[in-house]
Amino acid sequence: MKVLLVTNQYIDIRKDGCYCDFPLYGTLENMSVLGELHLVASFSYSDEMASIMYLNQKIDFVDLEHVKHLRPTNKSIGGWLKNSIYNRKLLERLVPSMDLVVGYMPSGDADTAMRIARRHEIPFLSFLVACPWDSLHNHHRLLARLMAPISFLTTRYSVRHSDYVHYVTKEFLQRRYPTEGRALGCSDTNFGVFDPMALESRLRKLSSRKETDEVRLITTAHVDVRYKGHEFVIRAIARLKSLGDLHYRYWLIGGGKGDYLRTLCKRLGVEDQVIFLGLKTSKEVMKILKDADIYLQPSLQEGLPRSVVEAMSVALPCIGFNTGGIPELLEPEFVVDQKDVKGIVRCLIHLRDNAKYRQTAERNFQMAGDYEHSKLEKRIRDFFSEVRKDVEDKRI
Image 1 (cartoon, rainbow, N blue to C red):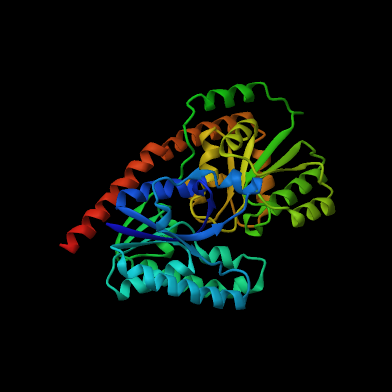
Image 2: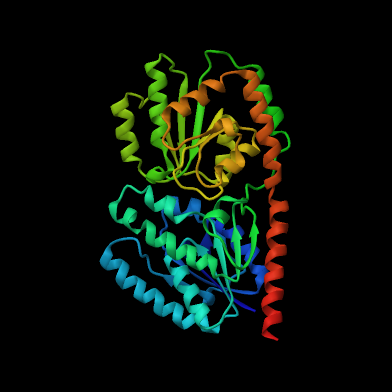
């Protein structure tokens, strides 16, 4: 069975093959059970260290002849129009020869592929990982905010009329983007090997904690993506500093220059409390998480954030905004209204209490076990196997 996956995720073309990042690799590996995989994706040709660190998983189960290039549609109005026409022509050529089309959504190109597939009566599977309304409505660029209602409606239409849908949340995306097709609600999170000793190590650190100790906060997200919300944690640190509390250090892991955040730190006088660590490999991220004290996900847009599950897997207490699937992961008292700096401060102070910290660490560690890779992989692969059987039965 020939399967076409349409995604705006980046892959890296090198002399020895095709590479992608760790999360996309897991997705492709699971989808390989559907049949012969063909891939239409955004290309990266960079040899810079940032690309090598992120796009380091070789896709050895996809034939390079089956990989085609989508042109970017997020640069300018003129570039968007020109490249959208090119992408549509490419999809018009590829889709009719497929047995199943999969859209990694939200994506305008995936929406286009869905409409073409529907016209040719080819089954379509939506793989919905985030809400386009939240990401665009909270964007700092006016053009992106103007596109929010259009993207919301096109995604809603595509998902509703899909034959199959894989949601990465249990409830949030299902409520906002319902479908008439067969659906699975299951995270695609993959944080590697679950360390059963992480909780014991965390509690051992807690037992030796002193009032005067530095409190290390951490967020893993691209530092130039404004809707990731780093600025609200920085403002919380500044508020705590104004109250005489200088114990907090904020570690930022992720790509980007962070010019806006660096300027904000200087303006608020907390530049010595905010540390930009840059890009790190998956192994390095997990090691740093174990050294941190509290994880924060102050995003204005999310699906079900893998980074929060990773933090929970090393028994880190977590604080997050009431966004996407975050409330599905955290205790209500640590879910803060969007942009609520006082709420972040309140939670941070609450976690200075050792009994509460211990309770939250134990709860998060236990819940992270539900997202262990082997458990999720079985559910996802079972669903894809059912999809494959259904498609093949309909072809007979």
